[in-house]
Length: 169
Image (cartoon, rainbow, N blue to C red; front, side):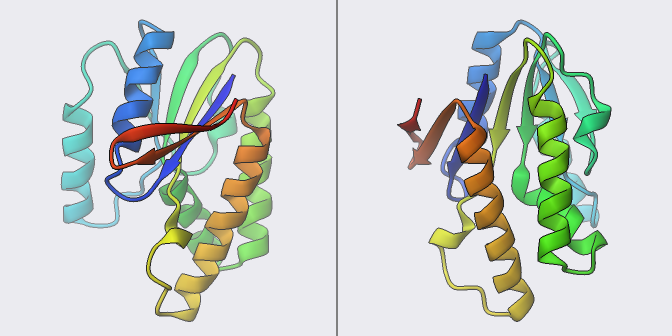
């Protein structure tokens, strides 16, 4: 099963996804896609790590999810926005190349057998219009990737103010 958990910032996506993972597995995998940009971001990563107990298998992978063997396991990938940022920066803001590379990585993990994949993403296009050209390009990338993920997901949940609203499945 592929679960997509989407919503705005601080809408409860990660908490919902973590609880779902723990209902599906005693020892789920947590895949952190964040790149350590600076000390503030490291503090954010540290805080998130402290929220997970010994039941979790923690893996840090900035881009290449296909390197991870998810077969027969439950995994939570948190989050698509940070994951896409890594492609976007590394391709010098090339939306099409970033989208192609991210789709390829997703399809590689989606085809693994007996797997529950829970993916957290942000609906950044529902917020304030991006001020910069690069910001607007990233919003387009995120929107297209979210559509692709939702079309491939078995279940899609939109988080609104901490309340899960099932929109697919």
